[in-house]
Length: 132
Image (cartoon, rainbow, N blue to C red):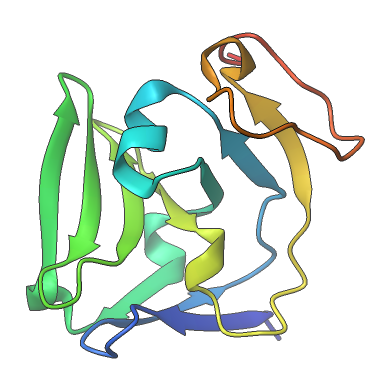
């Protein structure tokens, strides 16, 4: 039987369920993520076919760059998803999962671009840019 995780936005207009093991959390400290969230994105990842979304009509996609979009709840503004064009997987914001999530941070990326008002204090590897 597949492992199931549930979550959603702040107001409940969007709920989701994932099936299967989730990837470790990637914390992205780039300026785009920082400006959208006020800190950094922390997201796990699943294949599209392992994600069911209830209230998908309440998800608005913002074209964050030429190659990706960021999905958020149009009712409450909660950041929920990040989707690269042409990929068959989707990133889901770690903080949007119901607790306990069982998630752990696996890596920090774009650390060269992180804000000056905080330090990264865990032992996860840190990269100046992307890992790919």
